[in-house]
Length: 614
Image (tube, rainbow, N blue to C red; front, side, top):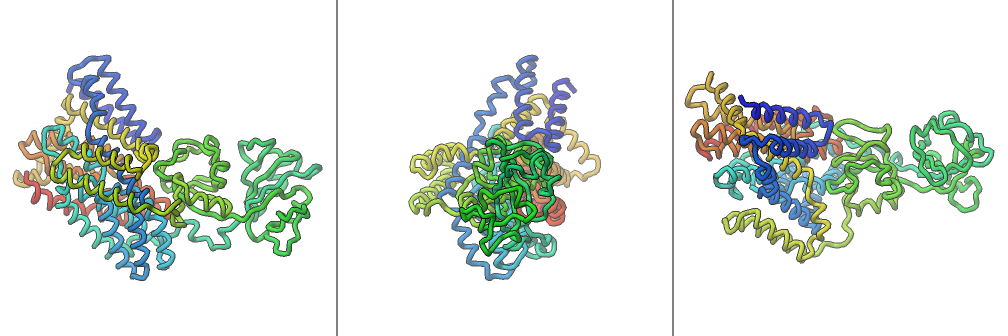
């Protein structure tokens, strides 16, 4: 092996390690890989490595451009209220039994996800499903995993159903083969939707856990707290002591949220900060301290009528304001502008008038040093705020409230809805009948949506998932380097030799197909699905060429394996969203997702060779 192959293998190993351990974000890992490839190719000038022009050529690849356009189209369908139509229909089905409702929900979500990016479908439907679960007296955990799985299964049916299909088609085209047709994948996608639906309907109730979200467990009374602002009185016993010494931090009905001194929010451990005269304290107080007889602290402004401090604190603290508040759960939206920033950097409490109590991220509850935590897409937030603040948050695109159906700022325009539907229909028809390439159809569709004001330009830019595109660009460059240096051929030969040692000649192509599927599936469960496709398709194509076989069935297997990710909550973006929202544990996905992975593997291995001959 040449040093270039060793170099590419080392870069591949470091990439996989970084993706799994997430010391840095996946998109930063991919961009670092791209930067290293550019730097090494410039310094060494080795012919086997892609040139600078070839490496930077990934930015002209049609697949990422198409994917970015489909993000915009999906957002337009969401903004104009098209996806909301599904929610209205599901709301009418709350009288059905669990299995019948599950059956209809899975088919409806799968149908929508075949043409719309599945992330907005799941985000829009989550609050609806949570509300319906309460009305049907069903644990939300019995519905949210099926919601995510249905969106994944639907994405396997069409070329535009998921970004991995578009990426696979783009790589296949650049390798000199025909692109994947708009409905070509339906031949395997529809059987997967069928068996997946049957499995979830028959075994979902048994395999899915019975858990509720944190706020669903709380009673209506427990979800209400008073957000009370007080100040430290002159000659108060609190002066010179901290919240622990004064007993404030230990009181079971009061929680210290903030200490404000001369207009500045104090940092550090609040319970250990020495209090001074005039310090303003923000408290969360349980409703057991309400005072219905109007005997407050006697400040004369009527504010204290809503809340009365315990007797031991009345001489030390004086109420400035007190408002009834609610505890709610929300999820950081994909386009949230504060992703990657801390609460202090975005001035969270002043911006949203809400207090962040806890963060649930990938099965871990974060409660300490919240001001230092950088918020990530998909984080589940436990928030507390006044009723007015909650109502204002319902109109925000930054946080999706889980226990309330998202309200529209204004009624959707029927004209804009029609334009959005006609646009996606036009893209499908133009690409299906090969009138123009899909990238051209998508670009034209985006221009129609912007000109018709179905989406503002700023909203279009925000709707693009730039981290996903960064991963695609970086992994395309790495895949290109693997091909040019011969690393892909070497891996393909290794896989083939392992199979040839034990498999009969007649079964070798099918077994190789199964191996490619399993490797891609394993990558997808722990890496990005787009990274798995970008890395595996060059290997799959090399494997087929070396054996004199048609690469198409191997590419199709890679497409399906990269989408059919059910066994972990981190393998697919929609799984990550429902992970925190449903109160799930990591093993909950494995318990029901691993059997579904095996079912999809068996179906794909049987059907793909029948439809796409070797």
